[in-house]
Length: 225
Image (cartoon, rainbow, N blue to C red):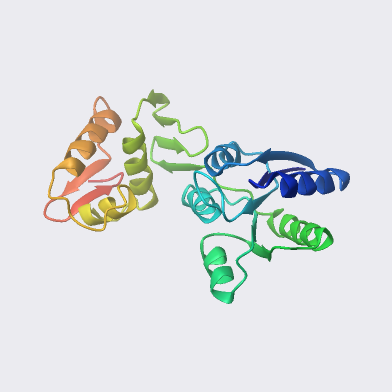
């Protein structure tokens, strides 16, 4: 069983890796949030041990990004922040457990074992699909009718959000908040431009359009007119 430890303090990371290896686990390490996210999305890990305060991307953002991609690998958050509010925030961000530093390794090991038992029967969903359109969250490949589509990162984000809400109208405000992280209207046509380019890639040349404009409301990804 492989475990990913994302911890920027070298002494703590070495202590964790040594103890986990001695307990029979294979351990990968990262001291950087973004690198940790990249490793975690590669799959193959039974559990994650994630420090809350990390360079490049903090631990809560890392776990939140995994959960947004529907990657459910059990995650134990480590943090020196131990108030009730801090623990609640960590669990609501997608963490499965929260352990306050300093900690006893025996307790950490017991918590990891509990997470592994809990997640053993719940394999993560790594893809989204509508009709003949498929999106792989791990490889970031998109195909329609078996044909690979070359999407830019922002187009991929838009399509992912539309697929997660397929059959429902997605407004421009929803796209601004979830794809651009804007909580205001920049008064530009940036969304229309990106959606138009996405439509060209996923619908052009195929018999049945999937991406529909709902006049005065937004967009809807659906298989029927």
